[in-house]
Amino acid sequence: MSTTQQRANLKDTFAQFAAVYTQHRPVVQRVLNASFIFYVLFTTYRSVSARPTPSARSKGKGKGKGKEDDKKPARVAVSPTTIRIAIIAKCYRWIASSTNDWAKSCVS
Image (cartoon, rainbow, N blue to C red):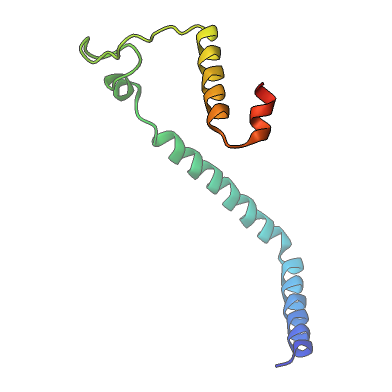
């Protein structure tokens, strides 16, 4: 079958579809609207029913719940100055060990 025959066949099929659709347009629109409403209600029901109940959520470990032994160690406060010094020292060590003369000339 050549492409012109396929194209003519496709045009005929589309013309038949358009004729049937125009004859039954109100019914088709009602079916489309009903199916969309069904889809929205069904997906909403699934998403709401899939969530755990509030009592089941409170049983799990949440923030501030659990045994005293399970607590993580306290965080250590680090000042921004300490971080800056550590980063600069690491950069200088990298530049000093670098074989790139351009990087060494930028530091000195």
